[in-house]
Image 1 (cartoon, rainbow, N blue to C red):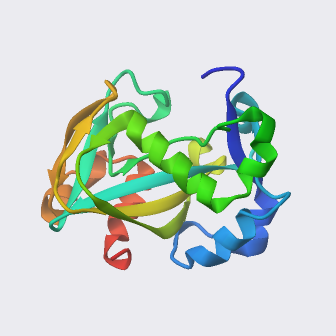
Image 2 (image 1 turned 60 degrees about the vertical axis):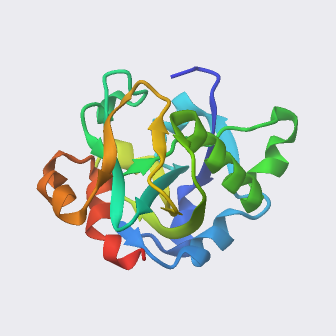
Image 3 (image 1 turned 90 degrees about the vertical axis):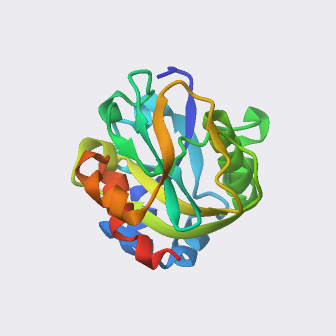
Length: 205
């Protein structure tokens, strides 16, 4: 990871004050309203954030669906997060970085800027050639492992008009839309966050 990369974080105590949990929380507004206010979110060096569980890195996790099927892929060996290599995933996303370092404090707390950053992040990994609707459907937390302890997922559900998605990142392999029964067969190969999301798909509609 780049030593000078800055990532969006909130203090764990803010997460806990909103209501700490493990798994999925569907009351998204309660958390969004706590996180995206002046003085709460900030940018900090990623190497520091990865080792400090007193902060949670906010990670958009975008699940795409079309016609009752869900986009899925396997992270190849070029994946930036080596702890997730060769795992199947339902989500596309990553760290939120400041667009303009001079205005990073202003950028951090505006939810509209966060949503624009999510679109940029997804566009770096895949190309979407269709219209879609974006809905924040859940918050995701898993403190059972070292990756989860320093991350907090904001789960988006993008409902696509057509299944027109092409990969841009080389680390994305075996990408395609899969039915619930097909995903069930490969659930054991999924990364932890994807397993949690798969088990909660019925709540996200």
